[in-house]
Length: 470
Image 1 (cartoon, helix red, strand yellow):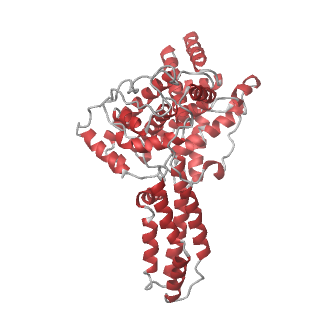
Image 2 (cartoon, rainbow, N blue to C red):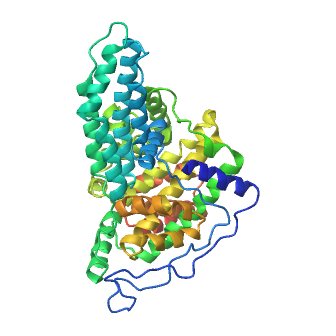
């Protein structure tokens, strides 16, 4: 459904419609315990932040985690209270005309689907998807029927009447898989309260944690402006990619060369040419456990090479005087650098349709940037779900307010810190290019050689470096 919304918005965009941007004049709702007076407010209370320069093209954030059919099936379960699985079991119960071999095969496929659904459901929870109490209760009720003794006895009885020979039905495996799924659904409790109290003390705790993740104290207002700038830039790029490939929003093609080993070999070779390790050191091989079996090339590039795994390998070979700085590198510095490094693989993936690959990348980045913005507005400024929806209306993204609110509610810092670190990297890179750096590839190597440092100090150092060289 959300992909369909993206496609409809894309059609409007390509027809020249949907360009009017509504900027809310004031969307802040005061919440219990939060007064608009300066005396008790955690921060200066201002009208709802609106995009610094509202985009004239419709941003289309990612709304379904890209796990192919498994993610779609999990979304279906969330949308229909367990009905998809219920229908599959009903089909089996009506399958007396099947042979034992065919019934067994379909039953084994059902168990596999339940396990995959469980994994996909966990992934949705990690992305901020949650269930209301009513939806959770209905879903658990449906799933409980599917693993009841009556249902399992009925399955065994139908199987026994099927013609032909066959093994014993693995009913215990089915029950165990359903039990795990029910447990994860029951744990998917909707969160409606910020992690931080909306008072002066809570605001102070938030700023302290944020400073720790970023490695230096930075005013939330500055972070908000930076993330709005990043979201706008990525939204324009996303719109351009969508115009170049109008079918991109409908595709579900996974970016992979076929096997995990092939994908890792490509990334390994790319990384060696892009960012060689100090002192001719070699990149260690990545294990399957470290990378995850389900990740496509773009995700592997961020988590593996030339992203986070490369940074860990790089930090192990830096000069002795830099090791402490690398060992204490803040999350924002590492994530921002890893995002840019991962992006370097995008131009190399033309065989998958470069416009489509760029669409996937910018879609993900708009998602990350808007989630980071929403996290700041919720956990620091005290925005409610309705306030978030009013704010996102200015981005043309009000349709995705529920998804972004849920994800940001469970994710106070991860997307925010990564997006801000990426913005800082781009900002310093542009300043370096303006000062005389000859290429982004050269800047990446010099940036790595400089090592982690507060952003303003790093920016000043890099600019002076190229000015002297010029």
